[in-house]
Length: 471
Ligand code: GLN
Image 1 (cartoon, rainbow, N blue to C red):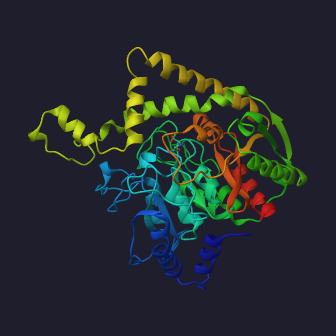
Image 2: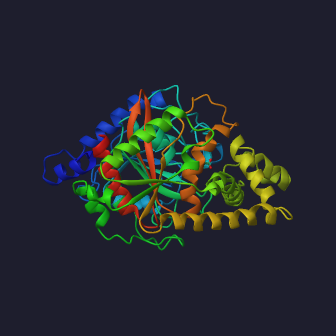
Image 3: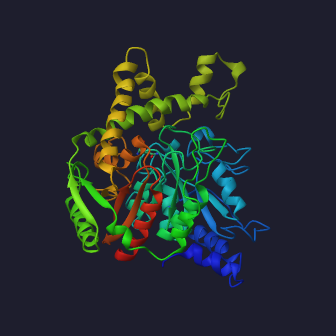
């Protein structure tokens, strides 16, 4: 069974490992690789004193996306407006990790306020793909994916509103999970579109992904949408135990053809995907093709809801409640004060705030926002039907190869093929996982599974088997 984290934890428990080694190595690697790939916005220079000796992650280094607040450690959302923000408290997930002895080595680069898919809207410059520096690592959790993919850490946290954990995982060849909505506390995650935002784990192996997930998924009274963990210690057992091949025979994998044969999908990637399906079938998986044309509308519905929620959530960055001040209030009238401060946002964030404000404005609200909510409900019920009786939706992790790092990010058309399968999980609140299944040259190939609510145990079990089959 592949697992670096669990092996270290076990060695440390037996007294066979040095508690500083893992973190030291991560910091050394980060110092070497960060200048090459621009992975971190804030990187800790030295090993913290008094490392915890106990805890499930004692001495284990981890990288955290820079939209998750960390007490006394700068948290920027990759935006000029929060460039100097040092939080006074930590997110619940950060508190959990620190209590278990994990060592946060730095805050990772990302698309500004998690808005983007290429990692290129960061005010701190783009992150490059460690597999090929001419390519984007995917976004918005670009730095977290690159930190794992480049071997600096084995664990990282990202956030996923419309694919931001899974796309960069797929493009850098690592594992990524978007949890059931409510399974991981959002307290301390700076909101983008809070009806879809979830913090999600990223890892170099399926076992380590499951292990990290077993630790961060728990009920939090500070998050009104938190529902807690229905699995008891099951996920941790899945992490520790050998892969269970029977799982493949107990599920029905369904491949919606609209999400594979998308007009913008890449033929060679689709071919690799089909090859992966044949292999899973030969291991006993039941796979069938289905068709549901409404799935092609997922990005449209997602963007209307995401922009609306973003325009409302980002209203607090006004230089009064949050955000830097570029001008003093006594010097100018309120409108000027507001506009000067809000000019610190980058172009993509401004675009989304303006579109969101328009969508929610009188006369347009019913036409766009209310319609999108109805469509979201319809898509949800269609998907519930697909998943009834043990069904799991199977798609490529990304039906296109990573785009070039200098791709024109104002033209999002090529991302449409990527958006539909990933955003589906956020619109419906369902858990989804991306699993690497090989490479074509330097291009990683992956599959995505979307399961019913609270089926992370099944998704993670499948990930462990799949990792071995394609290993
Ligand atoms: N690419 C999507 C967007 O730009 C998803 C981002 C995310 O999941 N945070 O909204």
